[in-house]
Image (cartoon, each protein chain N blue to C red):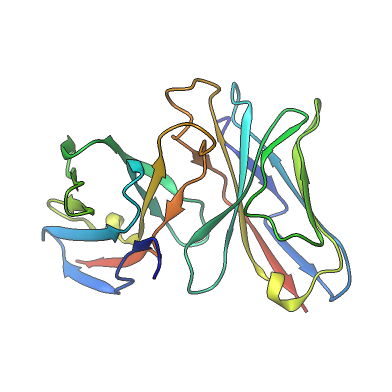
Length: 116
Length: 114
């Protein structure tokens, strides 16, 4: 089953450390999206990437957060100098390149980030 | 005011009941409407995808959109314990710079007990 693969499933970091979350899209999908799910809140859009391009990062915090989707390899969401408020479930989604279907997102199982 | 409002529940029903889940929204630019199901510690799974007002049926699931009232619903017939999950409504503008930028409701926790 070539679904959206995220790793690690769980990540524990101490305040001030860096967190790196990885996402491999479904086979044939070239669009990747990152969402964050905070406790008691719904999923919030963070960033939309295509290979080697950031298309929309309007949901990303201005500092400490960055994302990339290189030509080869998985998409990476990087959080520098983590704080307790970064603790959340981070979900990656992918979609086909077709204009008519890229609203149909397929989600991975998420990475649960816990900041101590 | 949130763009999408969804009662978080929890909602508990007996097996075989008809379940009604709802969302209201304020942004009239939303054109595509989706329902996702999320099991505990899993990612959201797309259940229903609709465009424009009207009904769409898929097995035991029916999605309903009323754009004039800015109101969407998901009905589950003959509910099963395996339907126990969190149900998330989601919506998006049409095209432009909105690709993949879904706006989600908070999710409704549903439990179907045998």
